[in-house]
Amino acid sequence: MLRSIVKKTPLLICGAMLLGLLGGCGGGTDPTTKESPSEAKEKQASGGKVVTVAIASDNGISTMDATYAMTDILHYELIYEPLVVFGKDGKIEPCLAESWDFSEDGKEYTFHLRKGVKFSDGTDFNADNVIFNTDRWAENSNTASTAVCKGLQTVEKIDDYTVKFVFDKSFYPYLTELSYPRPCRMMGKDSIDANGKFVKPIGTGMWMIESYQDGKETVLVPNPYYWGEKPKIDKLIIKVIPDSEARVMALQSGEIDFCAVPIPTESMSVIENDSKLSLVSRKGTLGYHMIFNYDVPALQELKIRQAINCAIDKNSIVDNILDGNGTPAAGLFPETVPYVNSKNNLGYSYDIEKAKTLLSEAGCKDSDGDGILEYKGKPLSFKFVFQTDQYPEWKNVCEYIKAELQDVGIDIKLELQPSAQYYDTLWTSRDFDMVMYRTYSDSWNPHGFLRGMYCKASDEAVRVAWNSDELSEMIDSVLQEVDETARQEKYSDIFEYIYENAIAAPIYYPNGFYAYNKSKITGVEFAVTEYELIKWAKIDTVN
Image (cartoon, rainbow, N blue to C red; front, side, top):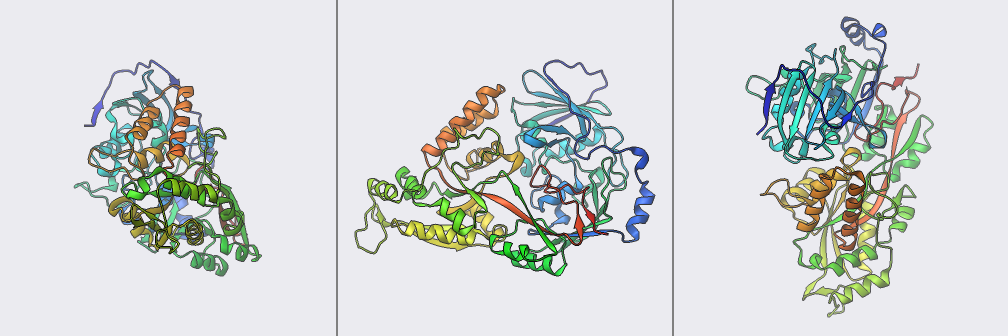
């Protein structure tokens, strides 16, 4: 049970101290150069500079509660802000908290809040607002999987701009989780009504809502009270375009100026051959892999899982299917992820003869000569689920994997599902044998992905990607490890366990290619995280 405490005595700080650097998520600007709220509103009313961006999934503004996880993630970055942000190389940097201190046992964090910050409705951000938000985390099913919310015991108001969080145990990624786009962003009190129902998004971020149509578009204008670097444009329109080909056509026609969804491999030549468009790439932290359903008897056999790994030619997938736009995977995560390195990033090499030997050793035989092996009297046949709404290249990749596994006697039945059904299949119905999936990105890796996929969110919940008490205990142990050297060793042990037990089949690490209309906009510069994507204050229109 989370308790909120108002404390009027001075704060005594002991233990380790970590001071944030001034600057943070918005970047500093000279207050004398800022527009007044009235000047900003006049500029917006005149139309001014407008940039249109495409996304793939529902904008869902009517449900954009900061604790809710269904709205497109970019909107959280644009409207809400956290206490701290995930910086370059995983360094935690200031945002609404200018600095912080923590106790030696890792259970208490004291945040010194930035002064002079206002929400887009003109109300002040202070300790009372932090407590308003943390109170909403308590006993909330939407925050149950986030340790910083679940483990928070008390929040003490020391003064108007100082709060202390007390947790039930040490957990090294607390600050990292506070940087997440959701559910830990700060929301204005008038975002909810007297009954606690969400009514509208009010944040301290660079942008605020002017208008929206759920499932179609959001119109954003600059927050006139924003404390950080002001945007150069006067209006940002976010259009929902689920189909990848339609997004490319919208770029060509000038309907959109920037596509905030990676361009599929088959459309890259179209972009490259259009003189108005520019293609830019970012090397991210994603890994694409196959999840095995641990309830399927044949997939409980280690040698079958190892054989599947050995039967897939990942180099050929990258070279021939993706035209070189990616890296063949070793382990689940690329080496851009913290704690992953060349020594512990273990994977299976393509070896079709070894795959056949492993299947034979597992007792698989083709007793009827139809080319499909049987395991314990049943055909070695698996339902392989994937989606293309967000990952259009998966269709060709999955078809290639199907052919590869067919060559060693494994029958694959591909099932393409709309994204909503796909996520329901993975998280709820579990009606799959294998599913194409991706790791999380940036601040979620590796700890958030490992915890979310291989540990239980509650006693009643099931583990999503593999059911192993040993692995879950290893993950719990590393998350409580305060010594950096010991933490690295424990992560290496986890990666080795995943490899030796072949609990997944890593396929490739994608390179994200994005496109924009260079004849209409300039200043496209990637942000640190994929969910923020670009530095929105730098975007400008071409004169």
